Length: 139
Image (cartoon, rainbow, N blue to C red; front, side, top):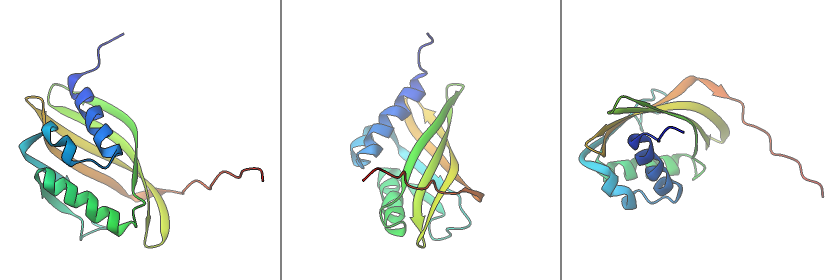
């Protein structure tokens, strides 16, 4: 069995903090110059660069308000590329403007000297999955 790439391990550690809405607790995983780049022409109020862990926290807080707290990320795949880049494929679910949506996104992470230095969040904007209906349960 191949050993997991160190950058994949780093992002899995970050995911544990994000699952608990504890971005501040993950601050030791980021470089001091960290930048989160968000690209989405459909959400111009969200699009842009967010600086530092505080900026990342502000991004997710803004997203929580916009989606009524329904935003959720489900990891699909994580691919290390060399010793600097990692590409993650995720599916985001949320309710936006009263409509449940599910979409694919990729995040390209730059890892430098064992710290997350930069990330580019690129959601699909022309291909949205139909949300899955709730599973019926016996009464």
